[in-house]
Image (cartoon, rainbow, N blue to C red; front, side, top):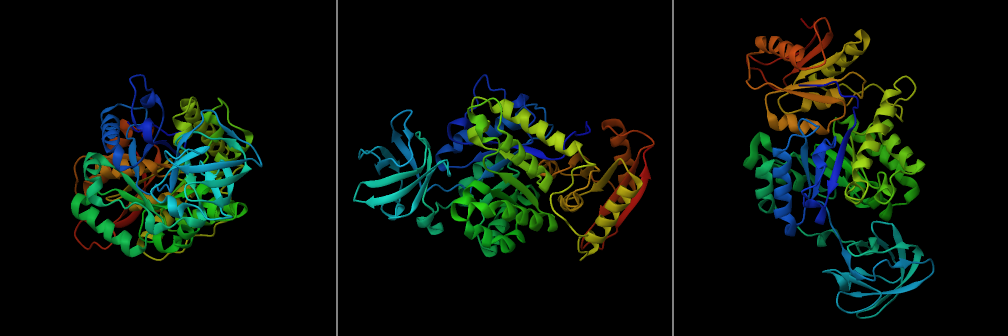
Amino acid sequence: MIEQNLRQTKVIKSFEGPALVIGENENLFDQEVDVFRLVYSKDKVGEISSFIQAVKKQKTRVPHPSIMLDISNWIQASIDSVEEGRALNFGETVTASPEGKGGDIQIKSRIWDKLFKKGSRVYLGNGIIALKVDSIAKDKVSLVVEQPGQVYKGMDVIVPDTRDESLREAVELKDLTALLKLGVEYLIIPGVWSPTIVNKFKAELVKEYGDRSPWLFAKIDSELAYKNLQDVISVTDGVLISRREMSLSLNPATIPMITKEIFQEAIDNAKVVVTASEMLASMRHNVMPTRAEVSDAANAVIDGTDSVVISEEVANGRFGSEAVEVMHRIIKDIEGKKNSVGLNWIRSAPVVENEMDAIAYQAFKTAERLKSKAIVCITVSGNTALKLASFRGDIPVIAATFSEAVQRRLAIVRGVESLLIENDPNLDDVLPQVNDRLVRGSWLKPGDSIVFVSITVSSVGRESSNLFTVQTLY
């Protein structure tokens, strides 16, 4: 059953570390979550495996929730031991040492000798706390607190000046085999990967998993990843913007405009764009978000994001369920103001470079002019749905596909609902079958006007088609 979705923007909920264990009283599957983001680490494969299996088996409020596996996570160091409840005050000097070596804060890192540099800034928890390196000894570093806050065990430690991508722990395809076989719809990869590396990785995925291969999203989380954007976006299926991490290596004041630039680049290329970092951050401890946090989430929707990420700190905190509900209310409120709130940037008509561009755009404009109830497309891999969604219109897009894997992948795309056709009929039989399925299994009813789109790129066979047509359901 395809219900008329009251929100276009999709919601992603993150899980990492201990949160990957689903407790007996977990109300996870009662929440309206479109995608579950699981942060990969080699020592958590068992927990991630159990999590994926639980999602695939459960009946959730979202018909086809999908799995996003983040293999881009890279931590220089983390806090191994600290006094419980310790607060760092402005101007205070604290000492950091390797694990087991004493000091106010003990830090776990495989690159301790290369971690600190005199005069560099050190960020805890991706910027929640900021310190500056005052002096360095063999097993002791003195740090001056510049931005105070409460420190706790497990906090990430980031030193942008010494961040070396060559030291990132490599994740190879063989490490992921057990998880990918269970069904993973998206992989988040480092945004610093070159097109050559991405294409090689993608080829290995396709060879092993065929049309079940996950979509690849580049994580834009640093100045280097941002500079690599145009190269990597051409060979991936989308981007995940980690604004908090970007602000550690770029001027924080520039992040809002850089984010809009990335949005524009992704949408112009019909790629998925996901917005992450500090969404409703205060709800980790409070039942209500701040006004600034509500504005931040609302602006991501206005900017045209496909999905928003509720981070693991919030999603799995005391008010994780409430955070999901608040995010839904923000999305529905902004999207409901269609006459007064448009996209937060001026966009000219897209450049028409090929048959897909021409047919999809004219189908979209026709649906707008005729005030059609939906745009219905046949999509084999998801590309036609992505192209139609990239126009960021108000008319729902229903993607009819013959693949359950494609149906699950489309769960992350703004404004798109999917319809699984279990057999692949001849072209002449597609529309009657879609008509029947929509009338029997969706909010659409006989007499409703739809625009039907079928685009086959680079196919010259009998079943190829490049067309759109206006239809009245019967």
